[in-house]
Image 1 (cartoon, rainbow, N blue to C red):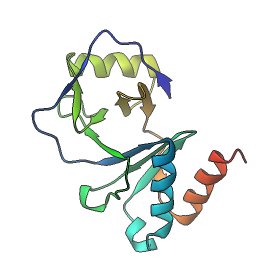
Image 2 (cartoon, rainbow, N blue to C red):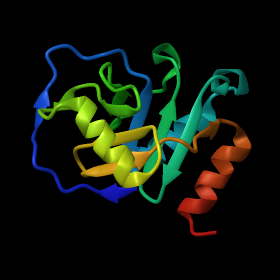
Image 3 (tube, rainbow, N blue to C red):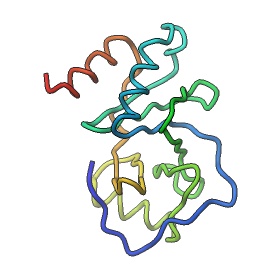
Image 4 (cartoon, rainbow, N blue to C red):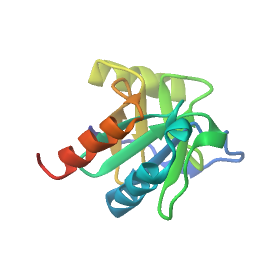
Length: 144
């Protein structure tokens, strides 16, 4: 995950795409984690997650994505599917060129580009959600 220096601005989308990921930072990430722990195992099926110190991203079908206060949603960009963006905002730069530049810089795809905090997050290491994966995320957050 890296901070991003940018020569472009975020703008509201005219029409939000169907979400494919729930994105939560800080305390919202902890609330989302707690919500996921409360779900039955069969509801976790089909969901995948990746996490960092202050981030939890849950990927799946829109109807299966959980909701908690403070999270937002993302989806792959139509013009550059390897670039995931918030459903409510989009960069005012050519998205295909931006996707190529980010892939070259990070050497991996797909990538989630996020406005606040300004970050580029690799999405190539998400794992199927399970109680074990959720426990490993919590251990990571607690520094174990």
